[in-house]
Image (tube, rainbow, N blue to C red; front, side):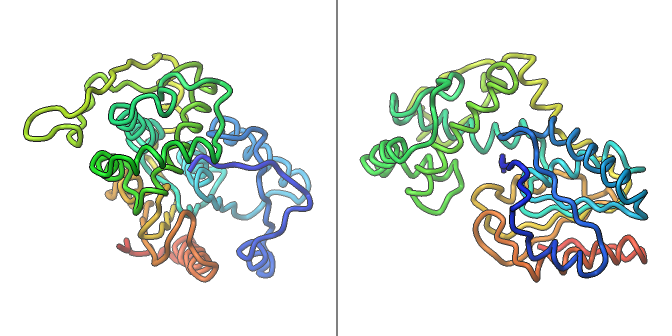
Length: 303
């Protein structure tokens, strides 16, 4: 989920953008000024982009936010914070739980378990060297360790919720880099596992590996929770669409928003891989959102 890219005037226009422009819409793509988990900066960047559109073309009748992966989190944050400026939103392959919980459960905890079961293969997740970057060499080292002990590898695989061992190796290295970036951005390790239970590391009531316990830097934890933990206070329509099997944003990361909120709808579509939502599925989702905003036809939650 932690993805972003800088704006480029030569970047290709996507199918969804082309279809919306053909219908008479103005489509503006925000290129964030920072990479990584840039939610704080992106919230400001999207607001500036909206102001630029207003200055150049006049006040639009309606502004709809479309976000993919991390962009969906940004869209949700803006809709919760400024419902008078944005009239609706749709997110593809994005989580709806708080960033702290997403990265803690999805990245930090599997890394901690891997460290306990396979010591010294990767740097510790709470103190990743500034020089660390994903590499084939790092993935190869993790893969070799996992294949050397299938029983322990299976424990890590279950924790990571991934289909095969090569995917586990690649994701652990990518997640370690994401945790490094978060720590730099937040000003220290944001995660605390002093009370976290790791049932996968217990067999017949006895621990099979000792987990190293760490505490968060309080300011770093506060930063990650601020950017962003959904409030549940949506007041404009928001449709979240995810594929049923996403290795980066699993279903447990998409079930965090209060279903009682009448402005939130979660749908799942057939597909695989991160952001495997097809053009037709995206157009159908946008059409459903449009019908919701125009005629009050709230889409159904779809499993």
